[in-house]
Length: 283
Image (cartoon, rainbow, N blue to C red; front, side):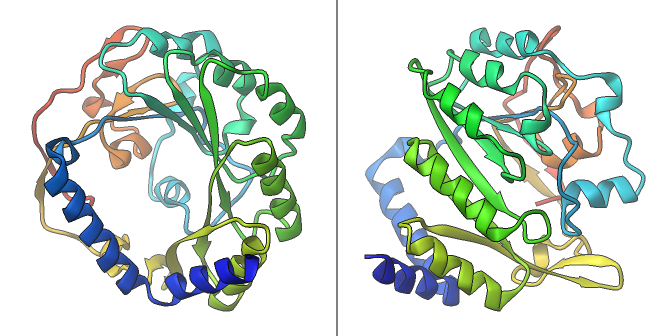
């Protein structure tokens, strides 16, 4: 069974354009079947900390730090009790994402995840560089909402076999949502896909990245590179991105650059994201 999965996943990896065409056809079919599929769905994400256990050259946060960014954690971080105010926030979505940085560096993560009872699912995005076996055991006790791990493998941050063992632990606990990798080296990525497939695990290959003159290039998608300045568009979104100090943004760029003037409030004092269009260059 693992060999068949490996062959399927390698085929998808080698022919991403074909996969994108199939996905777009499915999206069109779904839109024709349901009007609600055309609606913009709300997406909330908590950035508990910008600190990380890794130092990846392609990280958008590293790039913004090196080009003059000021970090909002300097204003302070919220306690789990403060974050749990989101349980009663109006117009909240069904699911909520917890990310960073590396969220397991946040003191009180376990309490926060267990306490987010106002949501049906809590997604945790982690690089698994820290031993979380005890946390996994404790989270098995949570019954009122589902917990899902989305694991990101970064080659320079952790030994592959250690990462694989931790993913298998999460899968056995029933918490595994996805495994992702930034494609830094083609040959190794193929090996990782095969190894995960032997354990019945699909791995999602993200952008292929490289460097040019000290700048990060997304070689599989030039428009996503920071060297590519795009014309403005009108953007409409239902993103709610919460900075470590509780400030609320509707755009990752504004969040990462701590664009306080673009904040729509704070979860302690109240926030409201307007349902209209804004001009955007970063897409």
